[in-house]
Image (cartoon, rainbow, N blue to C red; front, side, top):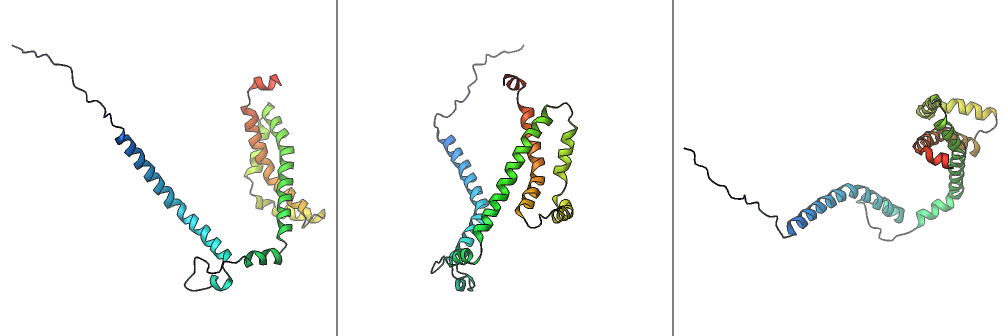
Length: 191
């Protein structure tokens, strides 16, 4: 004879009404993340502070043993020596001209080229762009030198702009092809 028993509703424990366990878990997670970030950032911060310390100390303190971290008599003489002893303003201007010129020309040439490749039916041109991008820049070094010497551009900013342009133009075209491929056809037709 089987005996059947009625089983009442099972009791499910309710969640704790107190928010503290959740708050403590979030605080623990934040603390662990903060400690991890601190451990990862401290070496870089230490190097930066050491460079700043070296820049603000006189030469006598820079070569002292044991090393002095906090300068006893901070000075800006190192910066004065750099600014007075070298044409750093001209160097900075040269860098700005080369970077700005090569970027502007790469955009002027690369955006239409990227649009043309993206909208054409022949996708083989993208392979040439990829090959140009993958070719190491050092492999162009000797041909560039011979070419720039032959046309009288040796040791000029124009040669440097052309060099940066040859390296950067395939990147611009590659990015623009991806951008124009992602545009909806309706947007192009609406224009």
